[in-house]
Amino acid sequence: RFGARAWRGQAVAEGLAGLEYWCSVQRAGEAKPWHVDKDEARAQHGAYAFPTLGSVFYGYPHGDALRGGLLEIAPVGVGMGGADAAAAEADEDGEKIAPEYGRLVVFDPRRLHRVTPLRAGTRYSLQINLWHARPLSVEGPSTRIPVAAPV
Image (tube, rainbow, N blue to C red; front, top):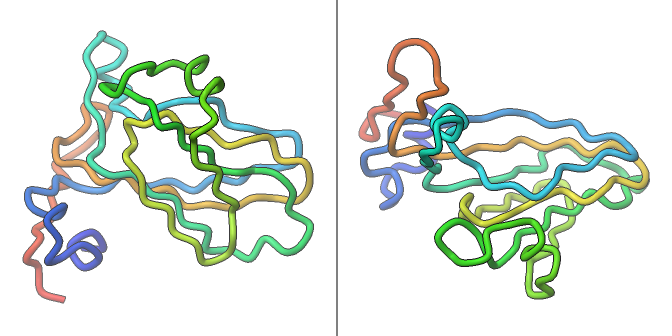
């Protein structure tokens, strides 16, 4: 229902199969390497499927002690040429986004992205991916959300 309410009336909501979401807590010294978001079950068999849209929300005040933990999004990714960590590392044109309270970052999850090492503090984030094809890695009954659901 959240997906139906949040994206109702937007083109991206047409045929939406569901949302995948998770929370992350990153502490000093931790990082997340370059990656693309994908259906992990399909990828194990050499086939790839990707969410339509990726997002990161910083809904918790980190305070002044937070240092590092930038979300970096490379201009390259799957189907965009140079979809490997070396290409992303060498590219100076990527985006570097600070984890500021209340910030929502929406991006193409096929683009390589990572979280830089956190030097101080604790970084909290909520990640939400929109899927038009249900990932094989999702267990249980279908999670199809009616886009025209009443509010």
